[in-house]
Length: 266
Image (cartoon, rainbow, N blue to C red; front, top):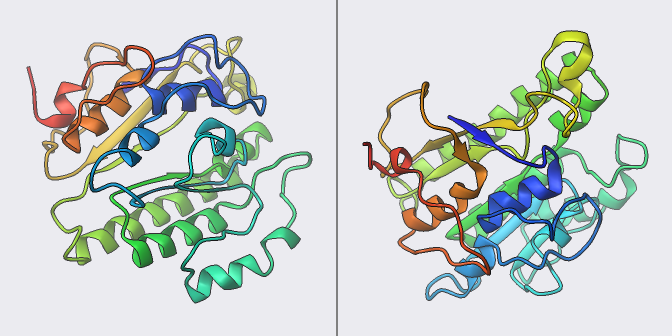
């Protein structure tokens, strides 16, 4: 399914993905508090979701994207230990050395995706949240460095993380047959020619196009969709809200539900 991101880079892309619209209040990757209401904080205010919403991300800018200044649900990002009321032995072990592991990308505040996966997966098994958001980052970093072999390797690793999470939910009585997983990205990349695949931004044709995949009991298994109307990233938060039984409301009008994702095929 083809989507568009009008800014073609990360913070605005994640903003549109999580708040359901894009505007000029978020137009850079700077660490500035997001003024817009995102889906996670909307859900955190709904009955039955208290202390049942969490986010884990490799890029530390997510503290600003999701806005830890305004929200107190679980958010952990970047190369920092995870502190919570309850921790598993593995999370405690990760905390003992995560600050000693430098980012593999000079000048970057991005941690290895393995930390993000392990923190999030342990949290899922221990706390059983109703909404869990996970953001990996290594593919983007290796693409910028144009290290295609490492890009493919980390994409394969990410597939393994996703499979582990899905398999666990389907083995757990609380989640089995009642869980929806959506996988998407914040922007696209350029074509492979002349090394453009490693870049994105408004000067890189094709970087505005991205994709999403979804699986769950309320989504028909119709395979890859082609020759469809263009879908905007702004529609995904609304669609997830709908699948959870809510009309997502932000501080501006949000995109409409993606009908095929919820079984409303026209």
